[in-house]
Length: 278
Image (cartoon, rainbow, N blue to C red; front, top):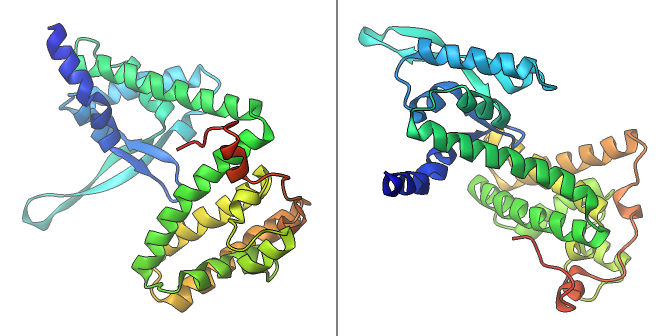
């Protein structure tokens, strides 16, 4: 039995990760009906009772039910081209955690699900609380890692949209965010050497502004199925400009007014004072 549990635990994470979805804002969620199958339930009416118990537990906690259990309708196809709408839920990680806590504990996959969602929920809590305790340079490394991942995704999306001149594409985003400045303009203003990475020479708040520009452009290109280099560049400029306008409306510091850190992340890395988050 112990050997079987070990084998099952090896696939536990992939089971729940494989049915995880991301919404248009990059937030993760799970569909209740897919979770039902993963947990070994065959009947929706029985699983609905589990969901009701989880919702009650959520009501008794500090979290709102509607946020964690978002009811949606799904269209299914029946015989002879007939269709029917069925009830489903978009579940947060916390909702999944409450569901597995209220599921049949005799099912091995349920026990493993309890461990998985408990660990994942705790990881998120740790990430959120730990970020505030980071030093400014540690926050820079953290947000720089996120911008790298974001740019990888954005580049792939832009390539699929037909972008070939990536310098032009990225400069469009910078121009929108930095009031007309290109990457070279930003580098000169910061007093950087030739080809020195401008993102490595930004503070954490400036990196966050760029991360928002990157992620929102990526999502808009995908969501609107944008095709063509010119349209993609226009979208990148538009998103950068809207991020800038939002910062201005909130009374925040404009991106070009953020001070340049005394040391680049490359310099800090060479000093071996920090580890870059991969």
